Image 1 (cartoon, rainbow, N blue to C red):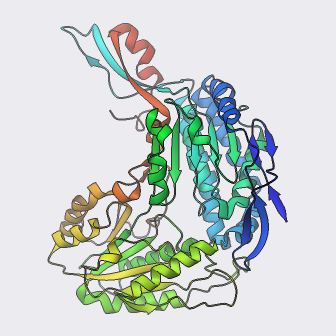
Image 2 (cartoon, rainbow, N blue to C red):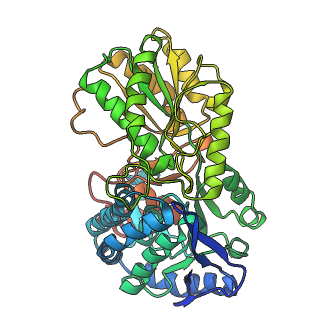
Image 3 (cartoon, helix red, strand yellow):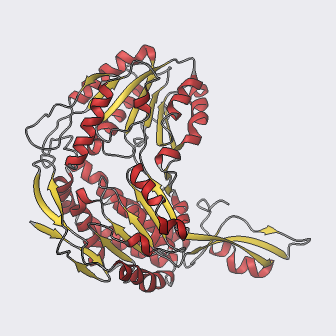
Length: 524
């Protein structure tokens, strides 16, 4: 039995009591434990604020970028070890593990490249300066500077490497030290990733700390220059947002939560066409990758009424062919859910769906005697107005097909938006009158709208892929937060200030000379 440790105040700390068990979701065997008992969270916060913060802010963007590049390399160096551990503690197939690990190293490398372009600056100008007086001499410029606080990152269990890496990349480049809190079910993967980061020595002392187990009174220690970035359930997100100390000190909080993501097949897409096959293939991947435990997974599939039978047949054939089993076996395509709690919640969600929709495949029956496995499950709704489909996310390999009237785009858009706010909506079609109208109608309710046509079908990345160049987040139900998006990812960690004065001095000190490179400038 392995006890994994937290990395705080420059050393590793093993809690001696109040342990949480860690499991192999394929066998249900207990394989480890973790605890944060004995950690002085006040000292952890002080160490980040007093030691890590000044050291990071003293570095230029280019120097921080070099540190991120080294962190990316350190994680990549143990890639095979992390892949094996992801199967053992996370239920991830080799492909799923690579998706997580390479997402982390790729995002870190992308922000390293961005920081290198920013060069020797330590601040960013935000938009063009403006004349404020009768002449250009009295002038104003918005500027972004590093906040002298800390970032607490509360990460989800489904992407233990990528979730930590993407938040860390933005904060470190912005000059803010991080305290990373791992999701418990896959904490062994997060711990090994954190160990690689700490052992690399790439980051200044105090710039990176890592916690497994309970977060204790950590949030009670934060102040007005600090921030919290959370990924997980909307229920926990609400609790964090409503935390008394965070409210009292106006601590910045970024939440990325549940999302009933939609995939839409346009009326002009014929069965058997390349675009139809792309649609079917992407939906199957987004339903089954990470056993459906992705915030960007497809939950609702909208197709023209007359295409429902053909789409259900195509999807069912592909879903039934997905091989379930031990994720460490090479030809396994979908492993188990990450924890017993997830397994119970997904089965309960499927039972709820069965009351209002017909199951075309899958269900709650156990495919194996042991392990937290759920078969890929496709439901078919009797109409658009099925409340539970638009209200409850089943966080597993589960989605529902809904038929729509091709002549009523307004109702289709309104039904998609009934999800309450999403991370990504995808659509497949060549007829721009349809895709343009739908995109504008659903854009305010989504962080990202992904459109495939014959022109890009052979070049697209799947809609569930989160890219460092584009924002990740969404309004309403999706949490109302925003991460990544190039330099936009630094906004949470930097303060925008309007500086006014003599144009010659303002432009020289705060202007474009220390701004983002052309093409990646921050907008006002």
